[in-house]
Amino acid sequence: MSQDAEQNETATELEEQIQLAEKKGLTDEAETEEIAEALDSQDELVSEKSGGIDAHHRSDSAIKSRSSFVPIAATNLQNKASHRIDPDKYGGWFRGYVRQDWNTINVEDGVQELRANWIELFFDLIYVACIVHLSAEVTYSLAAAEGHRRRLAGSTADYTTTDEHDCVNWKYTYIFVAFAQFGMLTNAWRSQVQYITHFVFNQQMDLWLKVWFMVCVLCMGIFLKDDYDYHRGFLWSYAALQVIHMFMFGKVLMIPRGLNHGRWFVGQSFVTLLIVVILLACIDEHAMCNNWTWFGVYLAFYLFDTIAVYSSYIISLRFKLDPRIAIPLNVPHIAERSGLFIMLILGESIISIMSADYGSVIFDSATTADGVPPGEILVIFVIMAFLFAYCIGRLYYDCQPPEEAILEGNNNHALRISAARGRTYMYAHQLLYFGLLGLGMGIKIDTKHLFESKRRWVDVVLPGYSLVVISIGINLIRIAHPYCIADVQKYKKIWVARGVILLIMMIMPLFAKLLNNGVILIVLFVCMFAQLALDVEGRARVQHEKAELKEHREIAKQHTERSEQGGHEEPPMAAPPANLRRLASGIGRM
Image (tube, rainbow, N blue to C red; front, side, top):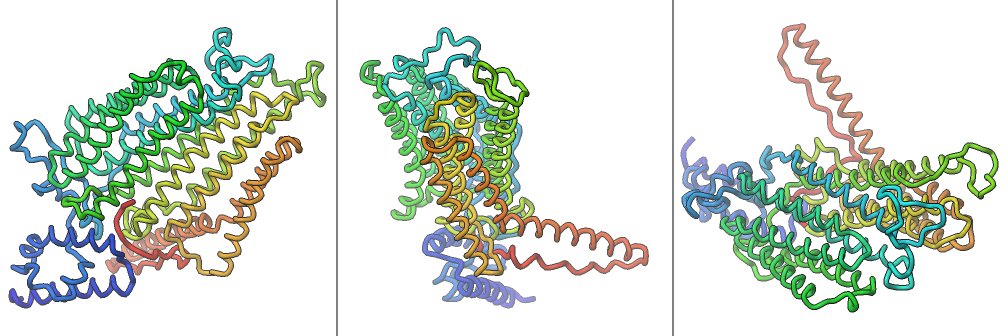
């Protein structure tokens, strides 16, 4: 084939891809800008691969729309000077490169599969300890009933649970402080996960930076307690975390593609560090005695970190920075790490059940002389708490696309459709984190008050509204993902039913003082199982997995029959179920 014919064929293919994208309506303004940047960076590559074609040989529609580009394998970025640290600079001491960019997603096997390694899983174990410790401290910060003891930490002789310990008259304020501290911890987890999903740094110095990052998070977990000195220790640990963060992103500054990304996050960490140091230098115990003040401080740090990350994408687009701050996410890795973190917090709920101080479990049909109910009630409560955790896990994992589909496709996850859906997916997970923490704390507090006759708001409000937040988060994830149910009218009715169930769950905790708490928890329990019965997305996923298994069995059977007959013809592949039809394409972003 002549060079001119090759040029014409390549241009025709580009035009067909553009027209297909325009017909499907797959691009928006933000995506067009992202693709345009990628297309410009690929002009030279196109010229080499197509026998001399450059940007001027493309058709007018191709140049105008910028809706298609020539993709490259993600692993090839380590060979591009713009996406790696120059090994001949900085004394040759530093290595690293960008894991993927906007033009590495649409080619088959273009995104290098990234799985959680043992260091990431070990990092998650620190959060198991932090969450268990945080739940315990919340429980022990409340005024304990007589006869209860501090099981995990031994004697309570040196641990005060009166108003003197709490600094304020309302003994539940530390619950709000704990949620804000947990928000800061989850932001640290998110920053580490996104750092790994964006960049490949595997030198010995990078390993030690990760170790010291984990040490800082561990220290933040150590200083979780309703005490002034512990609050200062928590903030000093957070300041040290920002120092490690700046060192980590210092290497990003050496990569041309990551220059503005590194500048933004180094600057964000520096500002945070400066504020923490000034705050610690100016405050004293008298000024910070009120827990609401600590709540405001921690909430401000959490919101600053969250808003700063989101603002980086907006500013990058608004001012058309080159290179852009935003770097695409590795979708399989983010999906896996988010799912593992959900499992981790769910596991904390199980730990809360099994580590609670139940006292003596007496199996008797009547209440004992000292007012302890029969052991059957305790066993039923423990089973109910476990089934709560099971329902949540089932609802969450069944509404996710299958792992194999995420690895093979490029249009089957919320992070690959649009920035809006990507942000919905990420922030819905943040709601889930808070909801699951609240549920774990609520279960632990309920077991503490299980044998008391006094009704408290916290016994129902905390676990009840935590379940509401969890349900909202799961529904947002369903909305973000690209599932399409065939029966639209039936699907609308299902969403109406979900809204009614959510309304009932929001109303029931308001009767904490009027109804028996056991009745309220049973109603919430029924509502969770009702949501499970309405999980059509989960059933569609199960049907899809069964269809794939059946297809694999048929293919294996046909291969066996052909091999016995001496044939080599490949059997046809079955089409995927219509109710799991994918709707759009894109790259991981938020």
